[in-house]
Amino acid sequence: MTYPAGIKVIDGKIMENPPSSENRPRTHRPDEVRYLLGAKPKETTIDEMVAIMDEVGIEKGILEVATNHHEDYDQDTGIKAVRKYPDRFIPYCSDFSVNPRDGMAAVRKLEMLVKEFGVKLWHTMPSRVRLAVNDKMYYPLFAKCIELDIVASFNVGIPGPNDPSWFQDPIYVDEVCWFFPELRAVMTHMGEPWQFMCVKLMLKYPNLYYFTNSFAPRHYNSEIIQYMNTRGADKIIFATGYPTMSFERVMTELKDLPLRDHVWPKFLRENAIRVFKL
Image 1 (cartoon, one colour):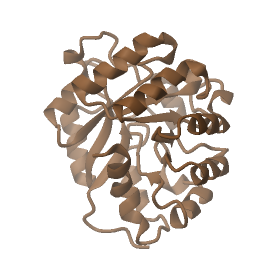
Image 2 (cartoon, one colour):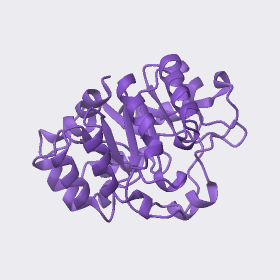
Image 3 (tube, one colour):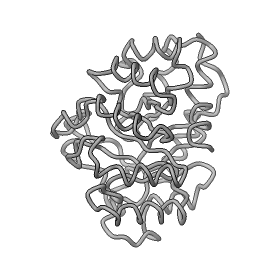
């Protein structure tokens, strides 16, 4: 159960947190971030972010792109980061840029982001767009994810921001995985208080996975740790959710997790490589 020395960690879900003088992504609502964390996360440049990753042992991060208010993607700070550090960042996009309510325009935009910028994941927060994940507005995008051979992810569990919670009940994931068995899908944000439902769904569906983002390791729930140590070693993917959780805190607390020796490399690296086809 010892944390493995020298492992090259892949962080499954991170965002920028640039200084206010830079183009700020729309992913941040400072008042709500401050409410959730008790303080505003420290702002960092991309160079500073990479330096911290080096310090704590994170080799790569799956980074959100296409978040700026304008659609001049050459000026998008996330895309700039991926271009500057192609060996450190893998791009993903979210419903900020590809909103299911936009119909076929969203489908075409997703295809463009994948083909032009190498996006590997499309993410949605159901409570933000006010659509449960089994709403049929999502279905063209899920079909396109299969066609483009990328991953779809969605928040599950009570949302931190002051948004309606019922949209993120993981029971809605059941229909999606049943209807789209080829879809590689990831549940994010731990799924509380429905974590046992998340486990049962992963046992049921071979292509359904789970991120640990935006939770400190000391607060990982016992159902998930037990699942990782038994039938779920291939199902759980490490993610910090930076900047909602600092790299330093997560990597420090990880070392106290009671994981079996064979689970560590899968959790920290191998599962991400397999699921995202890195």
